[in-house]
Amino acid sequence: MVSRVVNAVNRSGLGRKVLETVLGVHPQAWVPEYYGNTLRKRLKGRVGRRSAGEAAGPTTGKVALFTSCYNNVNEPDVGMDLVRVFEHNGIPITIPSKEKCCGMPKLELGDLETVRKAKDANLPILERLVDEGWDIVAPIPSCVLMFKQELPLLFPNEDAIQKLKEHVYDPFEYLMLRHKQGKLNTEFAQPLGTIAYHAACHQRVQNIGQKTRELLSLIPDTKVEIIERCSGHDGTYAVKKEFHEYSMKIVRPAANKVKQIEADHYGSDCPMAGQHIGHAMADGSRSEHPLTLLRIAYGL
Image (cartoon, rainbow, N blue to C red; front, side, top):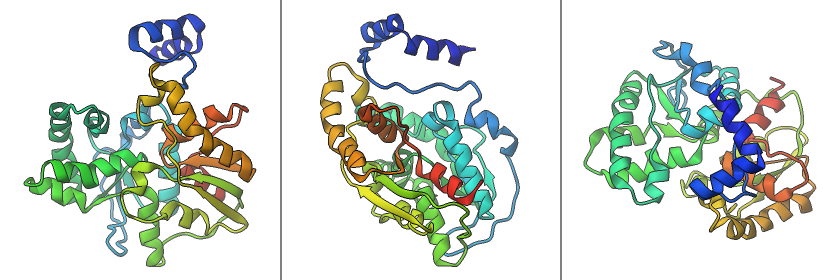
């Protein structure tokens, strides 16, 4: 019920004027849908799940999905695509019993006290999962970067953070690590044609290579054209009325590149970046997350 009201307000002219006045949201900025049937609700039966995984390379072969604030509430279908793809590859999925925001939005605002509180809430739960043999995967590059790089730098003397750092993975990084050991299902049912793939900034700085492009390129009759430009979204930057016009200038080259490629599909590992590119396209097309594309290629 609440999600329907929020979505109705976000779609109405009067509602957008209120958002502009109260929250400083630009009236032409793209804002996400909200879902009452969240990702955590859909996966709640997996909390406390016990399962054996087949190890491959550094991976244990079983994964705890950090659902993230955004995917949990705004794009739960992407999280479900991750679950379907991983289980199709024989990787059991659980979720943490509780989650707080990873802290990246507050880190970007310099609110280190809130970052610390989020860390203190998440760390014991995630460390316990690691001790039980689960690797941690998140569908948002910012969350992976936070656990893998930012928190270890902010709190270098906390052993639990350093332990967690070694077991946090980007989804495509995880699958490609297993591919090296012959553990990736490469029986694809559907080609995808040409994909305009935007490499998200927070993924690129992880120094893991172009794992998303590499995996999607394994799909027969599929060509991946990479776009390595900032989308201009940057959390809340693109929606704020004082910055929205600048963000649209930043995203325009990426949107123009998608048009130039004449792609059958386009998207980004960062769903907000992908949607911002779609907003700039202004042609009614929609960004598709690479996990969604992979699920389609598997015929799931």
